Length: 440
Image 1 (tube, rainbow, N blue to C red):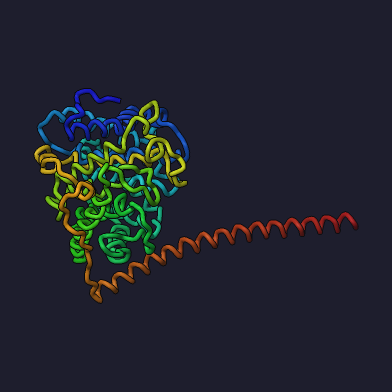
Image 2: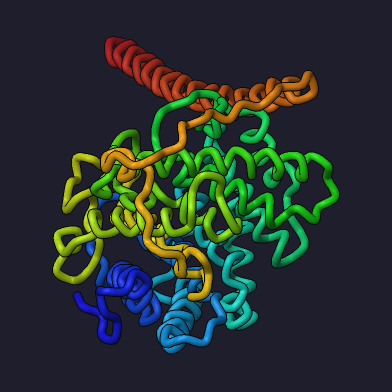
Protein backbone atom coordinates (compact mmCIF):
# COMPACT_ATOMS: atom_id res chain seq x y z
CA UNK A 1 0.00 0.00 0.00
CA UNK A 2 2.88 2.36 -0.75
CA UNK A 3 2.51 5.32 -3.07
CA UNK A 4 5.58 5.75 -5.31
CA UNK A 5 7.27 9.14 -5.21
CA UNK A 6 6.12 10.28 -1.78
CA UNK A 7 8.31 9.88 1.30
CA UNK A 8 7.03 9.58 4.85
CA UNK A 9 9.30 12.15 6.51
CA UNK A 10 7.54 15.29 5.24
CA UNK A 11 4.13 16.12 6.73
CA UNK A 12 2.39 17.12 3.52
CA UNK A 13 3.82 14.15 1.64
CA UNK A 14 2.60 11.89 4.41
CA UNK A 15 -0.91 13.35 4.18
CA UNK A 16 -0.98 12.82 0.41
CA UNK A 17 0.29 9.28 0.84
CA UNK A 18 -2.56 8.48 3.25
CA UNK A 19 -5.15 10.22 1.09
CA UNK A 20 -4.07 8.16 -1.91
CA UNK A 21 -4.45 4.94 0.05
CA UNK A 22 -8.05 5.92 0.79
CA UNK A 23 -9.11 7.51 -2.47
CA UNK A 24 -7.41 5.48 -5.19
CA UNK A 25 -9.62 2.31 -5.07
CA UNK A 26 -12.80 4.41 -5.24
CA UNK A 27 -11.62 6.88 -7.87
CA UNK A 28 -9.90 4.41 -10.19
CA UNK A 29 -12.65 1.80 -10.17
CA UNK A 30 -15.45 4.31 -10.74
CA UNK A 31 -13.49 5.86 -13.62
CA UNK A 32 -13.29 2.38 -15.19
CA UNK A 33 -17.00 1.68 -14.57
CA UNK A 34 -16.01 -1.20 -12.28
CA UNK A 35 -16.76 0.09 -8.76
CA UNK A 36 -19.85 -2.09 -8.36
CA UNK A 37 -17.82 -5.10 -9.46
CA UNK A 38 -14.77 -4.53 -7.27
CA UNK A 39 -16.15 -2.92 -4.11
CA UNK A 40 -17.18 -5.45 -1.43
CA UNK A 41 -20.81 -5.51 -0.41
CA UNK A 42 -22.44 -5.62 2.98
CA UNK A 43 -25.70 -3.95 3.93
CA UNK A 44 -27.22 -0.89 2.22
CA UNK A 45 -25.63 -1.89 -1.08
CA UNK A 46 -27.98 0.34 -3.09
CA UNK A 47 -26.45 3.43 -1.51
CA UNK A 48 -22.80 2.59 -0.84
CA UNK A 49 -21.36 3.64 -4.21
CA UNK A 50 -22.65 7.23 -4.32
CA UNK A 51 -21.91 7.42 -0.61
CA UNK A 52 -18.28 6.36 -1.07
CA UNK A 53 -17.61 8.56 -4.08
CA UNK A 54 -19.53 11.61 -2.84
CA UNK A 55 -17.59 11.72 0.42
CA UNK A 56 -14.27 10.88 -1.18
CA UNK A 57 -14.68 13.60 -3.78
CA UNK A 58 -15.74 16.09 -1.12
CA UNK A 59 -12.52 15.31 0.76
CA UNK A 60 -10.18 15.73 -2.21
CA UNK A 61 -12.09 18.58 -3.88
CA UNK A 62 -9.99 21.47 -2.59
CA UNK A 63 -6.77 19.65 -3.46
CA UNK A 64 -8.00 18.92 -6.99
CA UNK A 65 -8.85 22.59 -7.46
CA UNK A 66 -5.45 23.82 -6.26
CA UNK A 67 -3.32 25.64 -8.83
CA UNK A 68 0.18 25.37 -7.46
CA UNK A 69 3.34 24.65 -9.42
CA UNK A 70 4.72 21.71 -7.47
CA UNK A 71 5.56 18.02 -7.75
CA UNK A 72 1.91 17.28 -6.93
CA UNK A 73 0.66 18.72 -10.22
CA UNK A 74 0.84 15.50 -12.23
CA UNK A 75 -0.86 13.55 -9.45
CA UNK A 76 -3.64 16.14 -9.22
CA UNK A 77 -4.07 16.01 -13.00
CA UNK A 78 -4.44 12.23 -12.77
CA UNK A 79 -7.09 12.41 -10.05
CA UNK A 80 -8.99 15.16 -11.86
CA UNK A 81 -9.21 12.86 -14.89
CA UNK A 82 -10.43 10.04 -12.65
CA UNK A 83 -13.04 12.35 -11.13
CA UNK A 84 -14.34 13.49 -14.52
CA UNK A 85 -14.66 9.93 -15.84
CA UNK A 86 -16.14 8.76 -12.54
CA UNK A 87 -18.84 11.45 -12.45
CA UNK A 88 -19.70 10.69 -16.07
CA UNK A 89 -20.16 6.99 -15.25
CA UNK A 90 -22.04 7.68 -12.03
CA UNK A 91 -24.67 9.78 -13.81
CA UNK A 92 -24.88 7.79 -17.05
CA UNK A 93 -27.94 5.53 -16.94
CA UNK A 94 -26.22 3.16 -19.39
CA UNK A 95 -23.12 2.69 -17.21
CA UNK A 96 -22.71 -0.26 -14.83
CA UNK A 97 -21.75 2.17 -12.02
CA UNK A 98 -24.82 4.38 -12.47
CA UNK A 99 -25.62 5.95 -9.10
CA UNK A 100 -28.94 5.35 -7.40
CA UNK A 101 -30.73 8.68 -6.93
CA UNK A 102 -34.20 7.31 -7.63
CA UNK A 103 -34.76 4.83 -4.81
CA UNK A 104 -34.91 5.44 -1.08
CA UNK A 105 -34.04 8.58 0.88
CA UNK A 106 -30.33 8.03 1.61
CA UNK A 107 -29.25 9.51 -1.77
CA UNK A 108 -30.17 12.98 -0.44
CA UNK A 109 -27.34 12.65 2.08
CA UNK A 110 -24.75 11.26 -0.31
CA UNK A 111 -25.54 13.67 -3.16
CA UNK A 112 -25.14 16.59 -0.75
CA UNK A 113 -21.50 15.67 -0.09
CA UNK A 114 -20.87 15.38 -3.83
CA UNK A 115 -22.55 18.76 -4.35
CA UNK A 116 -20.35 20.25 -1.63
CA UNK A 117 -17.27 18.89 -3.37
CA UNK A 118 -18.34 20.14 -6.80
CA UNK A 119 -18.84 23.65 -5.43
CA UNK A 120 -15.34 23.57 -3.93
CA UNK A 121 -13.81 22.28 -7.18
CA UNK A 122 -14.92 24.32 -10.20
CA UNK A 123 -11.95 22.92 -12.17
CA UNK A 124 -13.54 19.46 -12.28
CA UNK A 125 -17.00 20.88 -13.04
CA UNK A 126 -15.57 22.82 -15.99
CA UNK A 127 -14.00 19.63 -17.39
CA UNK A 128 -17.32 17.78 -17.48
CA UNK A 129 -19.10 17.59 -20.84
CA UNK A 130 -22.47 19.32 -21.18
CA UNK A 131 -24.41 16.06 -21.16
CA UNK A 132 -22.85 14.97 -17.86
CA UNK A 133 -23.46 18.39 -16.30
CA UNK A 134 -27.12 18.13 -17.30
CA UNK A 135 -27.34 14.60 -15.86
CA UNK A 136 -25.86 15.76 -12.55
CA UNK A 137 -28.20 18.75 -12.32
CA UNK A 138 -31.25 16.67 -13.19
CA UNK A 139 -30.20 13.98 -10.73
CA UNK A 140 -29.87 16.53 -7.93
CA UNK A 141 -33.20 18.16 -8.81
CA UNK A 142 -34.91 14.77 -8.64
CA UNK A 143 -33.97 14.57 -4.96
CA UNK A 144 -36.52 17.28 -4.19
CA UNK A 145 -38.94 14.35 -3.90
CA UNK A 146 -37.37 13.65 -0.47
CA UNK A 147 -38.63 15.71 2.45
CA UNK A 148 -35.74 16.00 4.90
CA UNK A 149 -36.14 15.15 8.56
CA UNK A 150 -36.06 18.08 10.99
CA UNK A 151 -32.38 17.58 11.83
CA UNK A 152 -29.04 17.60 9.94
CA UNK A 153 -30.91 16.36 6.86
CA UNK A 154 -32.22 19.90 6.39
CA UNK A 155 -28.67 20.95 5.53
CA UNK A 156 -28.33 18.21 2.92
CA UNK A 157 -31.35 19.66 1.10
CA UNK A 158 -29.93 23.17 1.51
CA UNK A 159 -26.51 22.14 0.18
CA UNK A 160 -28.00 20.67 -2.98
CA UNK A 161 -30.03 23.84 -3.54
CA UNK A 162 -26.88 25.94 -2.97
CA UNK A 163 -25.18 23.90 -5.70
CA UNK A 164 -28.13 24.40 -8.06
CA UNK A 165 -28.13 28.12 -7.30
CA UNK A 166 -24.44 28.38 -8.11
CA UNK A 167 -24.56 26.31 -11.30
CA UNK A 168 -27.97 27.26 -12.71
CA UNK A 169 -29.16 30.37 -10.88
CA UNK A 170 -32.39 28.51 -10.11
CA UNK A 171 -33.21 27.08 -6.69
CA UNK A 172 -36.00 26.13 -4.31
CA UNK A 173 -35.94 29.00 -1.81
CA UNK A 174 -37.71 27.11 0.97
CA UNK A 175 -35.37 24.09 0.80
CA UNK A 176 -32.32 26.35 0.59
CA UNK A 177 -33.10 28.70 3.46
CA UNK A 178 -35.06 26.46 5.83
CA UNK A 179 -31.98 24.42 6.75
CA UNK A 180 -29.85 27.53 7.25
CA UNK A 181 -32.31 29.49 9.37
CA UNK A 182 -33.42 26.42 11.32
CA UNK A 183 -29.90 25.76 12.54
CA UNK A 184 -28.70 29.32 13.06
CA UNK A 185 -31.85 30.39 14.92
CA UNK A 186 -33.75 27.27 15.91
CA UNK A 187 -31.24 24.61 16.88
CA UNK A 188 -28.33 26.54 18.37
CA UNK A 189 -27.80 25.50 22.02
CA UNK A 190 -24.79 27.63 22.97
CA UNK A 191 -20.99 27.68 23.25
CA UNK A 192 -20.53 26.95 19.55
CA UNK A 193 -22.75 23.85 19.53
CA UNK A 194 -25.92 23.02 17.63
CA UNK A 195 -28.52 20.45 18.45
CA UNK A 196 -29.20 17.90 15.74
CA UNK A 197 -32.70 19.25 15.40
CA UNK A 198 -34.66 20.27 18.48
CA UNK A 199 -32.85 17.73 20.65
CA UNK A 200 -29.23 18.07 21.70
CA UNK A 201 -27.28 14.81 21.62
CA UNK A 202 -23.56 14.50 22.24
CA UNK A 203 -21.81 13.30 19.09
CA UNK A 204 -19.59 14.57 16.28
CA UNK A 205 -22.40 15.73 14.01
CA UNK A 206 -21.38 19.35 14.58
CA UNK A 207 -18.19 18.33 12.78
CA UNK A 208 -19.45 15.67 10.36
CA UNK A 209 -22.21 17.85 8.93
CA UNK A 210 -23.49 20.92 10.69
CA UNK A 211 -20.65 23.45 10.86
CA UNK A 212 -18.94 22.56 7.55
CA UNK A 213 -22.13 22.47 5.52
CA UNK A 214 -23.75 25.45 7.22
CA UNK A 215 -20.73 27.68 6.67
CA UNK A 216 -20.20 26.52 3.09
CA UNK A 217 -23.84 27.14 2.20
CA UNK A 218 -23.74 30.62 3.71
CA UNK A 219 -20.54 31.47 1.84
CA UNK A 220 -21.98 30.23 -1.45
CA UNK A 221 -25.30 32.09 -1.14
CA UNK A 222 -24.19 35.33 0.51
CA UNK A 223 -24.94 37.26 -2.71
CA UNK A 224 -28.65 36.47 -2.42
CA UNK A 225 -30.57 39.58 -1.44
CA UNK A 226 -31.61 38.60 2.09
CA UNK A 227 -30.45 40.47 5.19
CA UNK A 228 -30.86 37.36 7.36
CA UNK A 229 -28.15 35.55 5.37
CA UNK A 230 -25.51 38.12 6.36
CA UNK A 231 -26.60 37.92 10.01
CA UNK A 232 -26.44 34.12 9.87
CA UNK A 233 -22.95 34.19 8.36
CA UNK A 234 -21.68 36.55 11.07
CA UNK A 235 -23.12 34.35 13.82
CA UNK A 236 -21.88 31.12 12.27
CA UNK A 237 -18.30 32.40 11.90
CA UNK A 238 -18.16 33.21 15.63
CA UNK A 239 -19.70 29.90 16.64
CA UNK A 240 -17.43 27.97 14.29
CA UNK A 241 -14.33 29.51 15.92
CA UNK A 242 -15.49 28.28 19.30
CA UNK A 243 -16.32 24.80 18.03
CA UNK A 244 -12.86 24.36 16.51
CA UNK A 245 -11.33 25.45 19.81
CA UNK A 246 -13.36 22.75 21.58
CA UNK A 247 -12.51 20.17 18.93
CA UNK A 248 -8.78 20.85 19.26
CA UNK A 249 -8.97 20.25 23.01
CA UNK A 250 -10.42 16.80 22.36
CA UNK A 251 -7.22 15.68 20.65
CA UNK A 252 -5.25 13.95 23.38
CA UNK A 253 -1.50 14.27 23.81
CA UNK A 254 -0.91 10.96 21.97
CA UNK A 255 -3.21 11.81 19.04
CA UNK A 256 -6.19 9.77 20.23
CA UNK A 257 -9.70 11.19 20.36
CA UNK A 258 -12.70 10.20 22.48
CA UNK A 259 -15.06 7.86 20.63
CA UNK A 260 -18.68 8.66 21.42
CA UNK A 261 -22.05 9.16 19.78
CA UNK A 262 -23.32 7.73 16.55
CA UNK A 263 -21.64 7.28 13.16
CA UNK A 264 -18.17 6.94 14.69
CA UNK A 265 -17.23 4.74 11.73
CA UNK A 266 -16.60 8.04 9.91
CA UNK A 267 -13.23 7.83 11.70
CA UNK A 268 -11.17 10.92 10.77
CA UNK A 269 -14.39 12.66 9.74
CA UNK A 270 -14.61 13.75 13.38
CA UNK A 271 -12.19 16.53 12.36
CA UNK A 272 -14.11 17.58 9.24
CA UNK A 273 -15.01 20.91 10.86
CA UNK A 274 -11.42 21.71 11.73
CA UNK A 275 -10.15 20.67 8.30
CA UNK A 276 -12.68 22.92 6.58
CA UNK A 277 -12.18 25.96 8.80
CA UNK A 278 -8.42 26.22 8.31
CA UNK A 279 -9.16 26.51 4.57
CA UNK A 280 -11.60 29.39 5.07
CA UNK A 281 -9.94 31.68 7.64
CA UNK A 282 -6.46 33.13 7.98
CA UNK A 283 -6.23 32.57 11.73
CA UNK A 284 -8.16 31.14 14.68
CA UNK A 285 -7.93 32.82 18.11
CA UNK A 286 -5.69 30.93 20.57
CA UNK A 287 -4.76 28.31 17.95
CA UNK A 288 -1.75 28.58 15.67
CA UNK A 289 -1.65 26.93 12.27
CA UNK A 290 1.42 24.94 13.29
CA UNK A 291 -0.44 23.72 16.35
CA UNK A 292 -3.45 22.64 14.30
CA UNK A 293 -1.36 20.83 11.69
CA UNK A 294 0.65 19.04 14.36
CA UNK A 295 -2.45 17.90 16.21
CA UNK A 296 -4.17 16.70 13.04
CA UNK A 297 -1.07 14.83 11.90
CA UNK A 298 -0.89 13.10 15.28
CA UNK A 299 -4.50 11.96 14.84
CA UNK A 300 -3.79 10.78 11.29
CA UNK A 301 -0.80 8.70 12.41
CA UNK A 302 -2.89 7.17 15.18
CA UNK A 303 -5.91 6.47 13.00
CA UNK A 304 -5.05 4.87 9.66
CA UNK A 305 -3.13 1.60 9.38
CA UNK A 306 -3.14 -1.47 7.14
CA UNK A 307 -5.62 -3.18 9.47
CA UNK A 308 -8.24 -0.64 8.41
CA UNK A 309 -8.37 -1.95 4.81
CA UNK A 310 -9.31 -5.22 3.17
CA UNK A 311 -6.99 -7.11 0.81
CA UNK A 312 -8.20 -5.03 -2.16
CA UNK A 313 -7.57 -1.70 -0.43
CA UNK A 314 -11.17 -0.83 0.48
CA UNK A 315 -11.86 0.68 3.88
CA UNK A 316 -13.41 -1.60 6.48
CA UNK A 317 -16.35 -0.68 8.70
CA UNK A 318 -15.02 0.29 12.11
CA UNK A 319 -12.92 2.84 13.96
CA UNK A 320 -9.73 0.87 14.46
CA UNK A 321 -9.69 -2.06 12.08
CA UNK A 322 -12.93 -3.92 11.36
CA UNK A 323 -15.55 -3.31 14.08
CA UNK A 324 -19.04 -3.86 12.60
CA UNK A 325 -20.60 -3.63 16.05
CA UNK A 326 -19.94 0.12 15.99
CA UNK A 327 -22.13 0.58 12.91
CA UNK A 328 -25.72 1.80 12.98
CA UNK A 329 -28.27 0.27 10.64
CA UNK A 330 -27.81 3.05 8.05
CA UNK A 331 -24.04 2.51 7.76
CA UNK A 332 -22.59 1.00 4.60
CA UNK A 333 -19.02 0.38 3.48
CA UNK A 334 -19.22 3.75 1.75
CA UNK A 335 -19.93 5.62 4.99
CA UNK A 336 -16.37 5.38 6.27
CA UNK A 337 -15.08 7.40 3.32
CA UNK A 338 -16.30 10.48 5.13
CA UNK A 339 -12.83 10.35 6.68
CA UNK A 340 -11.39 11.85 3.47
CA UNK A 341 -12.84 15.23 4.54
CA UNK A 342 -9.94 15.30 6.99
CA UNK A 343 -7.65 16.04 4.03
CA UNK A 344 -9.29 19.30 2.94
CA UNK A 345 -6.20 21.34 4.03
CA UNK A 346 -4.28 19.76 1.14
CA UNK A 347 -6.18 22.32 -0.91
CA UNK A 348 -4.06 25.03 0.71
CA UNK A 349 -0.88 25.92 -1.22
CA UNK A 350 2.53 24.83 0.03
CA UNK A 351 3.31 28.39 1.11
CA UNK A 352 0.24 28.63 3.38
CA UNK A 353 0.98 28.98 7.12
CA UNK A 354 -0.82 25.70 7.78
CA UNK A 355 2.02 23.92 5.97
CA UNK A 356 4.86 26.38 6.52
CA UNK A 357 4.64 27.05 10.26
CA UNK A 358 6.89 25.05 12.54
CA UNK A 359 5.50 22.12 14.48
CA UNK A 360 3.94 23.14 17.76
CA UNK A 361 2.40 21.20 20.64
CA UNK A 362 -1.39 21.28 20.83
CA UNK A 363 -3.37 22.05 23.97
CA UNK A 364 -3.48 18.57 25.56
CA UNK A 365 0.18 17.95 24.80
CA UNK A 366 1.14 21.28 26.33
CA UNK A 367 -0.89 20.53 29.45
CA UNK A 368 0.50 17.02 29.96
CA UNK A 369 4.03 18.29 29.35
CA UNK A 370 3.58 20.97 32.00
CA UNK A 371 3.51 23.79 29.43
CA UNK A 372 1.81 27.16 29.63
CA UNK A 373 -1.78 27.13 28.40
CA UNK A 374 -4.41 29.86 28.40
CA UNK A 375 -7.62 29.15 30.30
CA UNK A 376 -10.61 28.01 28.28
CA UNK A 377 -13.34 30.65 27.91
CA UNK A 378 -16.88 29.84 26.80
CA UNK A 379 -18.53 31.71 23.94
CA UNK A 380 -21.80 33.30 25.06
CA UNK A 381 -24.22 35.18 22.83
CA UNK A 382 -26.81 37.73 23.83
CA UNK A 383 -30.35 36.93 22.75
CA UNK A 384 -32.55 39.79 21.52
CA UNK A 385 -36.33 39.55 21.39
CA UNK A 386 -36.08 39.37 17.60
CA UNK A 387 -33.65 36.45 17.74
CA UNK A 388 -35.74 34.64 20.34
CA UNK A 389 -38.81 35.00 18.12
CA UNK A 390 -36.89 33.51 15.19
CA UNK A 391 -35.67 30.70 17.43
CA UNK A 392 -39.14 29.56 18.43
CA UNK A 393 -40.53 30.02 14.94
CA UNK A 394 -37.90 27.80 13.29
CA UNK A 395 -38.10 25.22 16.05
CA UNK A 396 -41.89 25.11 15.53
CA UNK A 397 -41.63 24.87 11.73
CA UNK A 398 -39.42 21.81 11.89
CA UNK A 399 -41.28 20.29 14.79
CA UNK A 400 -44.36 20.49 12.57
CA UNK A 401 -42.44 18.59 9.89
CA UNK A 402 -41.37 16.04 12.48
CA UNK A 403 -44.96 15.57 13.67
CA UNK A 404 -46.29 15.41 10.11
CA UNK A 405 -43.76 12.76 9.13
CA UNK A 406 -44.70 10.60 12.08
CA UNK A 407 -48.43 11.18 11.70
CA UNK A 408 -48.09 10.03 8.09
CA UNK A 409 -46.39 6.86 9.30
CA UNK A 410 -49.05 6.26 11.97
CA UNK A 411 -51.86 6.81 9.46
CA UNK A 412 -50.16 4.44 7.03
CA UNK A 413 -49.89 1.73 9.72
CA UNK A 414 -53.51 2.24 10.80
CA UNK A 415 -54.64 2.13 7.18
CA UNK A 416 -52.73 -1.10 6.63
CA UNK A 417 -54.32 -2.75 9.67
CA UNK A 418 -57.69 -1.36 8.58
CA UNK A 419 -57.24 -2.89 5.14
CA UNK A 420 -56.23 -6.22 6.66
CA UNK A 421 -59.25 -6.04 8.94
CA UNK A 422 -61.54 -5.30 6.01
CA UNK A 423 -60.12 -8.25 4.09
CA UNK A 424 -60.67 -10.45 7.14
CA UNK A 425 -64.31 -9.30 7.47
CA UNK A 426 -64.94 -9.93 3.76
CA UNK A 427 -63.46 -13.43 4.14
CA UNK A 428 -65.62 -14.19 7.17
CA UNK A 429 -68.75 -12.97 5.38
CA UNK A 430 -67.84 -15.06 2.35
CA UNK A 431 -67.41 -18.18 4.51
CA UNK A 432 -70.73 -17.56 6.31
CA UNK A 433 -72.63 -17.02 3.06
CA UNK A 434 -71.02 -20.12 1.55
CA UNK A 435 -72.03 -22.25 4.55
CA UNK A 436 -75.59 -20.90 4.39
CA UNK A 437 -75.84 -21.76 0.72
CA UNK A 438 -74.42 -25.26 1.30
CA UNK A 439 -76.84 -25.92 4.18
CA UNK A 440 -79.76 -24.93 1.96
